Length: 86
Image (cartoon, rainbow, N blue to C red):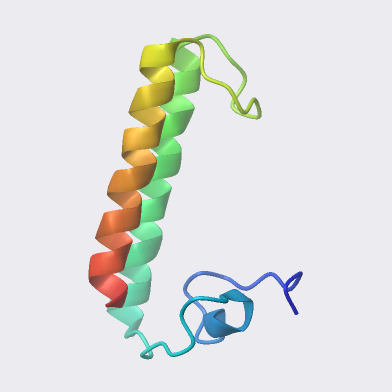
């Protein structure tokens, strides 16, 4: 089951998580908020690629500074989603 892909807003998201075995069911608004935060993160990272002249499909940013900015955005999204799902 480790290969199973589950949408992060799905009520079935426990099947591919070895650390958290119980989740509370999220409301439709919480699911929407979580998706909005993740979309904002993707938009930000895409902008960093544009600024750094790297393709969005590339794993690397155009500079160390942009890589740090991406890492911080990923962290910000993680903590905001954690707030919603706790």
